[in-house]
Length: 279
Image: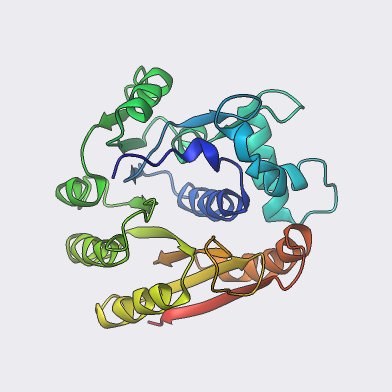
């Protein structure tokens, strides 16, 4: 359960999609001055060195953010994503990739706050070293899916919950639906962003069916695939399911996802933009 280390995958195509969507949501929420409560249920280590350690073993970032790093023809959302990563990276060579905690921190204002959950002791220690000195940020060694529920609704009445499990356990697909249903019941106006991998398409189809049956409205899906679904092991695609998305997000992704398919896919790549549930 605690064996997953995101450093092996930092900056890969899944991170590109997840963080690009995240940044679009952060920007939209910041259009209003009122404070925002951010919750990251699976925070990880916060950020990852790409020039050493785990990231060098598979070098997945080379086929993700690495392919985009020097591009000058990217659509606005990709350019904004790259500018954010470069600002946190701190140098022109790509040496460091921020996880979602650092990306959220980069966008936070004085009136905002962030709750980070992480169970892995080594990841938690890294997270604490990076972020524990910021009084706006709370870090908890607890199960984020269950322990974030009591934090809702936030006192700000505005919020984003990012859910990014490892899906090491097949039951994670069902657990996230239960957690989202409980969260939404307490805080129906919040924005929720759920990342998912595509390893066996049947699991994803069941996830979508369960969300449709949950009674939650206004759910949008954005998926990026590097190749067609296949039977052999490995992640072929990933996606973001967003509850109460910014009204601008679908149009932005309609411009962005075709470009990302061309930029990151070797062959048979595709994208999906589907309403899981309409209003």
